[in-house]
Image 1 (tube, rainbow, N blue to C red):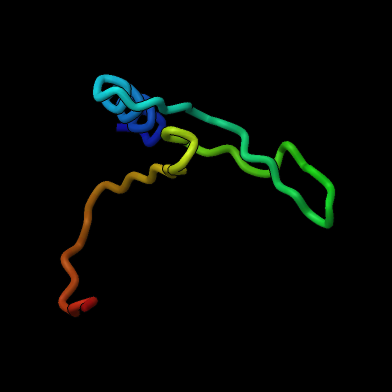
Image 2 (cartoon, rainbow, N blue to C red; image 1 turned 30 degrees about the vertical axis):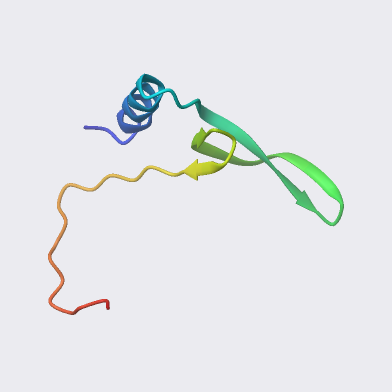
Length: 68
């Protein structure tokens, strides 16, 4: 599926579980004391605490190296 479908479905599922999720919320950038409203748009913001950026790929490859 297209990457844009996943945040919509995730927001729906989070809502079913009683969590508030806002799609495409603008996160202002403050630089040198100046607020720039076009700084960043989050895929989802959950309960005003967690920013979720959704990415999708066709295939995940298994790593032969341990990351631990």
